[in-house]
Image 1 (cartoon, rainbow, N blue to C red):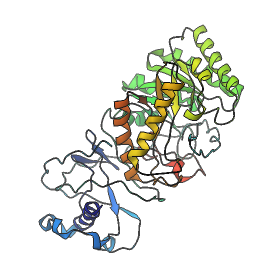
Image 2 (cartoon, helix red, strand yellow):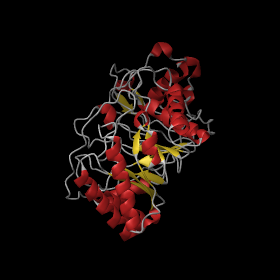
Image 3 (cartoon, rainbow, N blue to C red):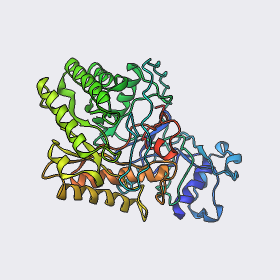
Image 4 (cartoon, rainbow, N blue to C red):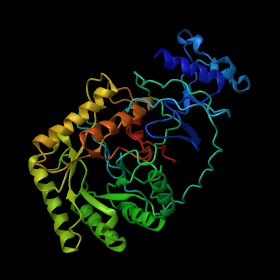
Length: 429
């Protein structure tokens, strides 16, 4: 940790950018990383000077005119943005070790915290936010050492989140709602999906409300956005809502074609919410029968459930087994590496004992950057560490996955900070 504290102190002095790896370039409110690199755009405003290794200071690189002395000597624990100063491009540093929702709130499989689905958003579309101009890219001074994951929980909402390199994640869950819970217009959805396409080529939706499936299909089709859709039908609110979602699903897919729709999940964690196994199986069979009758029988149909509640009987009526697995709710935390291995082992258990030879996929997994869920330290650095380590572990183990989630869920009004801050993008991206 000494190297980490040293680099943070130098950043406060020199006004330089702190990054976990290079090359990193400024891009709006985020930092864009190449390959497995992830940039961090801010550092603690206070520094433990007793831990600074002064022998590592490159005094010739210090831009004294950029020093914010009030920030350097502040006792506040808030985070401050660090602006990069132009200088010659450094040699690339080595990459670091690889390291809810719409109408669907997240429930963990270990000590879940249940929350009610958000109220149905208003159907009046909101104007798309004006795009922010990207700043002129600047080159960084010699990069500081990679920051290590934090070991204590951070409860403050982080101001900025990193972006990820093109195609770096297999899939992302995407809930399009505006921060106030209202429905976004097609322009907003299109803008967001264009950014999401720089991260993944697969998105998971939870419902068809707010025209989210239709808007996503339109945005992808007309904008030539390279994203596949894995749709959802919401069943937690009963048969009437299920039928409404199913009707809209069929209409939207027929309008834009089934080529972009790679599957549909019937519900999300409904056994965990108290639904009977027989009711869930009935909904799955009903959806499959309707799609076959509509000439859409080629679309895979399946349930999404916590691993602790996924049974062989449910797997038997699914075309694939999609499980939500989290480790941040566990009663013991030792390291981010152990947390990643835990979810992989739990997926292995489903594959070996439940799936019956069918493909197993993560419907959700992730790490919040703020709040508290138990002993697991929630922070931006640990979120970065988890996503890097998880995507490598999942690839090695042969699992496809939807990382939870594309953007912070401020639309979940009144929810805990931990539930609002899983996004790899800020809510206003």
